[in-house]
Image (cartoon, rainbow, N blue to C red; front, side, top):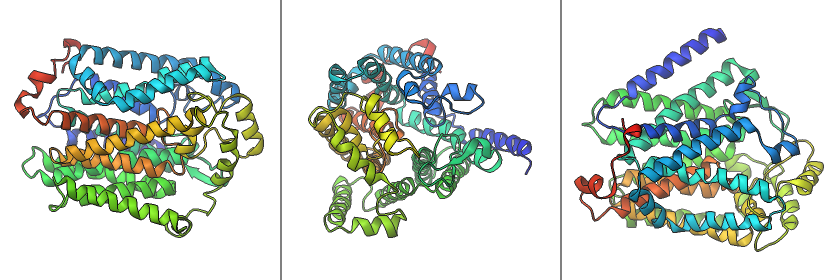
Length: 464
């Protein structure tokens, strides 16, 4: 197909997805567009790149420290509006933040760690930007109809990012393809800047589409159910196509594990029974530990996932960066390790792809925040798991999606820096934790009283 004709066809198809998926039975705040725009940007390329015709420039060490003024302005404006929304939503925002104290404790420690950073000015700017990992999920879940807001978030972002990524890969290769820095082979990147990022974006939004498909299958009396099923199945199909063609083994594995968890959780024997879900998760954990302890993980990596035993050079990076941590307990300071002399040393050692992350979430946190940071991340994950299981009796669908995000973030972070700021494998587990906290925290309040007691009416300029 001619690229211009393909572009027209895809955009008409995207408009069709939004038309089919419309649901007049729910009303969400216009403030939802703030996180939607944020995740649009986070799931594609910086604004400065699009202003440059879609091409990213300035990948030198100085650029990593200074950033781009256009991108900083856009992020600051979106973040500031998000904060205003939360302030105007008053009590519900305060209740959710107080209820999720491990998350606040972690970000408070990140702020304190700026004090021992070699680059405190860069570290504090990155910390301010990283608070969006809290602000944007809270804007979504403090909506008067939080579950509807999350559905619309996935649809508004996924209906754009997934089809346009396929369009770029198939018809605009100068924008949608590049060369893999690890192997030098052609790689499909879609709307993003590398195949691993495209893979994780695809698996996150594909999980969101699958969650909506399962919900629609269960709700036989839903308005416009068939039309919404067509839209969500189409989005799911785009996501699976991307996972198959991007060839990101970790992302593909995470999607199928998360999908299996959600499907099993929807079975009658498990649905709404936290004890059954708990046994399922514990079985997966025990199997994972046994695979690691017995050394079978090498076989799983090479035969099951299709990666090299050294994880395509990642183990060489791990062996080099771990001894470089300036302080085992405290780390280098928030987002400070990959700057200055340490970054130049790593680039000199790995000139082919010049890494700027450890390609392991646990090691990445250790390098920047030390063992204390790793412990706090573990606390957040455990707390999120408990919140999700508690919510499973009240809203099994929401809890299964949240658990899917938490489980896959744990797995994904074995080969990628998944707990890094603004990474979707960090943002969406936090979204799930806030969401299930609201569900489980309101369990003693009758449904019809939720809005009156805990959800003040949004200001007029944010109302629909």
